[in-house]
Every structure is written in C-alpha cells, then in structure tokens.
Length: 331
Image (cartoon, rainbow, N blue to C red; front, side, top):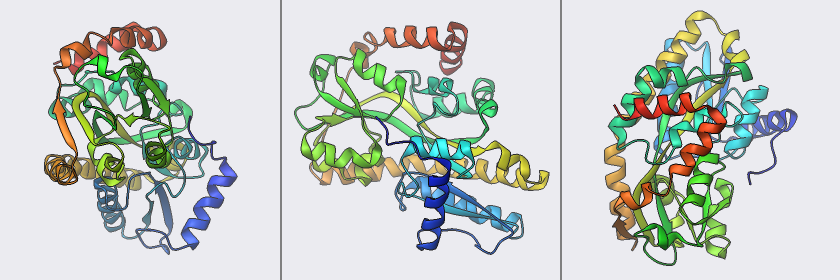
C-alpha cells in the first residue's frame, strides 16, 4: 500500500522546509507568484528535464510574474500523497500515476495491451477521446495539463526469464498503487504487491518481492537491475505520468497566465515525446552492459488471460466508457 497520506498542513510544512533547505528549485523565488510542482522521478530524468524547460518558458513568457519551483526525487512524498496534496492546495502541481484521487477513470489508459506502440498512444491522447479524458478531475479540484509517457511496462525479476504466463505463477511482483495494474498482475497468476516507489530497491534486495513490472527508465535510474537481472519485454500496459494542477490555484491566475501555462506544458510534452526513442536506446544498452538479460514474448498467451480485467473495470466505470476508449485506442 502507499505511504500515509500527506495532510494539508504536513504537505505545506514539507514544502516550506524543502524550499528553505536548498533543494532543486527552478525560477526566480522573488517572482510575484511561485508555483510548486512535485514528482518522484530523479533530478536527471527526462521528466525533470521537461519540467525545467516548462519552468524556463513560463518565466520568460510571463516576464517573471510566474516562477516554477521543482521538487523531484519524491522530496514532497510518494505519488499518491503528491496527488492528495495538490487536490488540497498544499502543492500547486504534480506528476504521477496514482490517479484515484483525481478520477479513477483515468486509469483506463493502463488497461492491458490497450496500445500497440507509443505512436498509437500519442494519437489517442491527442484525439477526441484523449482530450475528453483530460477534462476529468475538475469536480475534485484538479485541472489536467497534459500527460508525459511513464511508458510501456515490462516484467523483471530475480529468479528466471518470463516467457509465458506460467512463469509468473506465484511470483511476488511489486506494482504501483494502480488498481488496473494490480488486477492485471493478479489475472496473469502473479502476486501483486503495492509498494511505494521509494521502497522498491530495498524490497527487491531483501526479498520482500521477487520482481517488478517496471518502465525501463525507472528500472535503470533507480538501480533495480542490481537485484533483478531478468527483463521480459512484454509492453503489457502503458501508463501515464499525468500532469495535474490544483484547480482553485489555476482559476486564480489571469487568462494570460493560464494560456502561458497550457502552452508551455504542451511544448514540454512534445519535446519529451521526441526524446523517448533515443532515451530507451541508451537505457537498454546501459542495462545490457550491467548484465541484464532481455527476452521477448508472444503477447497472445498473455492477452488471453486479461479479459477479466476489462470486465471488472467495465462494471466499475461503465461498459460504454471502457469500450469507447478501447475502440479509440485501436484506430
């Protein structure tokens, strides 16, 4: 399960302490307004690089009226606490994949084998169905600014290569607190364990879990490969780093400031997408150099196991909603 939820006073105190402690901050702290954005990826990650570009553009286009303070590496908490704190107004913006606080239906993009590749994902997000999805959360005090690829997720473990669903049987697999991913791992015969992002490394080393279902950049940056040398390229789900903002804070800005935020976020998303292919090439080579063993799978055997996941969430979110997303993703 995720860490205890960060209460509004606690989140605000944490943010103030971080700012005073000299952690990574972008923008002019003396600007008229400073917006704080938190995420769990490393300071060197592509996610953080995109946010630095965002901060620079916002500062330039507003003439310094808005500054962006960036808190990477989980400085203000894990993904679920960040989302809760943004909803409460203790943090202005966040990125992450723990989306239940915003709207559980956002997890629809993580249904298993929904997308065939990144181009398919981006066409969906930029199309009518994706844009409609990005209007969710406003009734809970959130505005969605965009979605950065958290990427396709694979299987990695410390015991043996995974070539078919039977190889997952009884393996304890760490997942993020995403209900679709939890249900999918269970449907494939493994034992899902929802463990906070910051505790994955020690959980692998200590044997609390046998493996993970990582996005490869996280797998490399967090050094999970040190305890899990077998990586199966399954692309079994795609997940998003949703970019969200406190709606009341967003509404308090001028029309021009909101327009700048939207444009800067869109530009950062487009830049990020353009960097993905090269980033994965570099990461895969680096992992091979570390002794990681890769193997591919025939996805058909895995797809046969996941129909119950679609049935489960069709009941929760509505069959029409799930089928409309599935149809749009397959165009």
